[in-house]
Image (cartoon, rainbow, N blue to C red):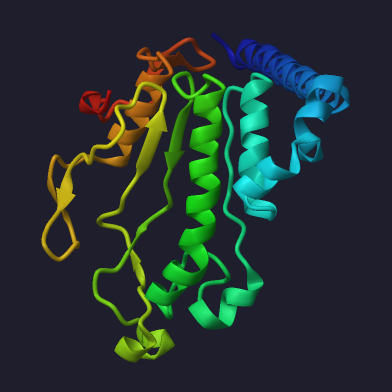
Length: 251
């Protein structure tokens, strides 16, 4: 091997690498174009347009859910289930009018006046809309094939009183990542049960402790998915979620 031959090999390698980069970029571009076409097709299809038209629902149904953004989002979720959409997420829209009262940005992040905000503002609207969704899906024989899950990014601190909103007198509750509740219904879940419990202070899980990975594996189980092995660009196998086990006691 002499320097001239080594440089020639390097030049060939650079050309091959360049061609591969162009090919990768071409594949990405093709995939992106296909996704754009799919999105446009969805938006323009009569079936999708009909699903998004909640005004097509009777007034009594809209009132059952709550004639507001969150209620209509849950009603739209039911219509999307009917249309065959496999995965639907509804984010709760906060009410700016509650910013001052709850120190919360209008939502569930109740750094102030936690108990009154839950009782008077947040829970009534949620209970109304979510119970309507469960009832509606059940009456349409869609509940057994649809898993509903209500969760958040964290729980609330067991100790009442956030220093940033008046301490104990402000009656707020700060963020708490050690313990929170998840609600599941439908999709084969047996209703009317509680799985696990916290300690007496509500600080940490104590019985039947589960992790976010366990909850995720439970969702996969309800979907009939048990094989979470995937492959990278080089064909090497890896697991999408190695940790956790489905909570089979729920089913």
